[in-house]
Length: 132
Image (cartoon, rainbow, N blue to C red; front, side, top):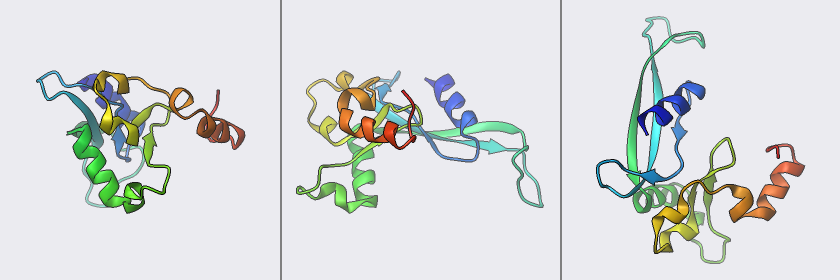
């Protein structure tokens, strides 16, 4: 998964990139990676053309990731709300509130917003936030 996290971070240079859930190679189960590029240092500040010299990342267990998400956005815990979810720039779901109750976490791998939340996908397409 290192290559995928590297690629995501480089494609989103300067931003924090998140992976979709995947099986950790070291036995931690289903995890989500957060990564960011490290660019060559300058004493005068960075510019967009600075070369990438590395990527740093951190893996989160899905439950821990949702804890941080809901701690940052307390409305996610409001039972009268529809719940919270997070998608990547390709429309794949990084985290969905329903995934906390999955018997098999593999069911969270490679799920597109159009599969899980077709109404939301339609609105995103209609508002040109996402393309088919």
